[in-house]
Image 1 (spheres, rainbow, N blue to C red):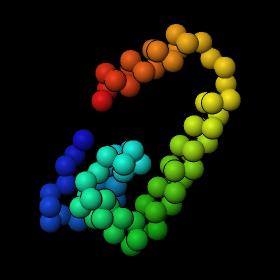
Image 2: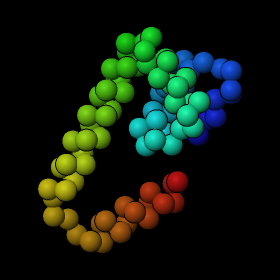
Image 3: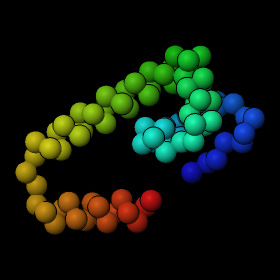
Image 4: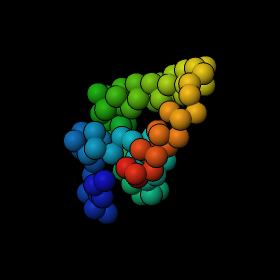
Length: 84
């Protein structure tokens, strides 16, 4: 993932690249502050994050409602681990 320089402000392109890092709480405190400063001043990005938060929440709830094969869960965990 892209690392934002200490004194650089986020722009919409940065938000697009870093959204999952933000949602997964994997940003440093400094990155998070700068990211949120951008959201405070950019309605389209703020709405995008709001949508992503809702989507992630719905997916979590729905995934707990479905009874799926254990092999699928193991395969998904492997894919996530390989891409981390």
